[in-house]
Length: 400
Image 1: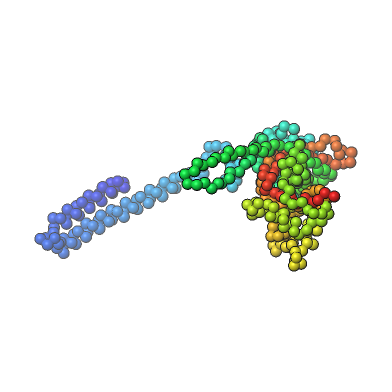
Image 2 (image 1 turned 120 degrees about the vertical axis):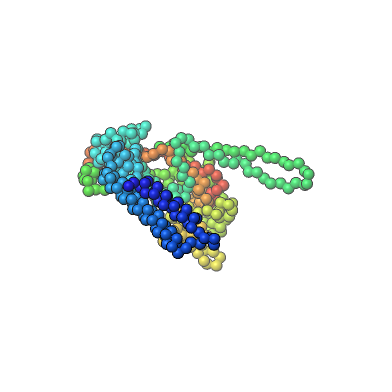
């Protein structure tokens, strides 16, 4: 008997049980003992049908599960663009194949270049670095270059125009009913272009061909240090011609906040004056930058009560503080010299760094062949400008 037939019989049995009750009630609506016993037997029969239906449904479900195939046929490409953990397989410069191809090319001084690298050739014939390398280079640059840490970095695909307010609106009091006066807001533009930076590292041939040597880490570490040094110098002292415009540039750089009374010494009062030459909104995120030699002189300064202005950091890895503000040093900042800036103080988030495109690697052909060395070049295109001069103030030494 099928499940549907059992369901039909259960329905018929239930209808018969209900009809029996209706015909057997007395004037009080009750059943006699004998009729109640008969109804109980009819109700049990309906329940028995239900139990049998459930048993047959469970058997049908079990049969369906057991009849399924134990494996699924492959109807598409294996992995279908996914890795073993189910994630989508990386392509292009992010792929493992591209990374392996770059490492192989480096070890053979680019004499063995796989086809996968051809999709990453830049305009100068170099090979764009794998995405993982690029990320690690940027992280290392941020550790080595204080401006990568303090400034505002933008990734651009072309020239980037930044609009800034050349004039600021001013509020005015007026009498009731008096006509409003309107001022024309003017805007200026600052362009972030792309200046090409090349840095080179040398590796001995013995190390290059030694698979146990961590060439990948060595290359990234050496390139990041060289790039960071060149960038930091340009972000401070760059002329803007063929290189970024530096923070200390006379035109387009930071504003002079204080001029020291001496050409060779800085006083505590002059540093305090420098802090308050910066407008209040910029002091919130302001920091000092100076040379290590200048900092050594500053750490000896005391106030009128003989207390040192310098405050050592209470937390490992954090810079010390001067008048409550963090202090960073750079070997490329001028030392105390007559007529030169000695300290910068401001919000360096207004110094914009524009990274254009992706860094690339290339070989230096025959340059070091005579001494058993192999050279590699890293190339990047970058620009930097202070977009708001009033956001950073300088303490400049007096002329001699």
